[in-house]
Image (cartoon, rainbow, N blue to C red; front, side, top):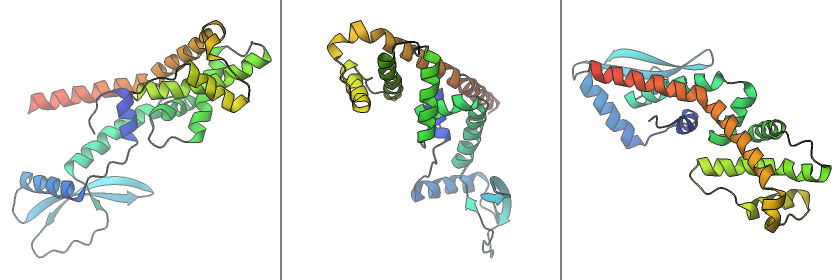
Length: 227
């Protein structure tokens, strides 16, 4: 797991990385060379201990021995991925529950409807737009969801939703027409407030992950100096 930025780390920490059979074989050969070609080798296993997967390291003989221990072999890269992912997941778990769901909606590869629902509620309640007239409030409520989806597209490297796309999104849910030609007059301020709330929540959610990444990079630098 390469750590590039907090957003990427959030996604990759929840992504099950399964290399190809050839990649596993190549990595196993590297590990074998590191620990010598005698009658012993180091084996890293992933075993189940009281419902939790735990990495175990064993030194075993190779000559005349048939392996019977249950578990999955782990390559060196796999172990590093697990350790890095664990640090990032601990940072995610340090967030308040609702903010975790907000971040999961934006960055998790296993996002679900509950993540979207909670993220939508956080944006809407924090925007302060519930004082408008009932008709405008109904549209602004769905604009909050459109703003979330637009932000998710933006942080993934795609174009954000424009006024026309937002108006169509809201129309599909309310059945009432929104004219994008009147966007600047009627809805730009509402959209800006929603986007500002999302930016604020995004920064809050990523803060502990960014701190964890800095620690990981410091450890990597220390290892390079020691080597």
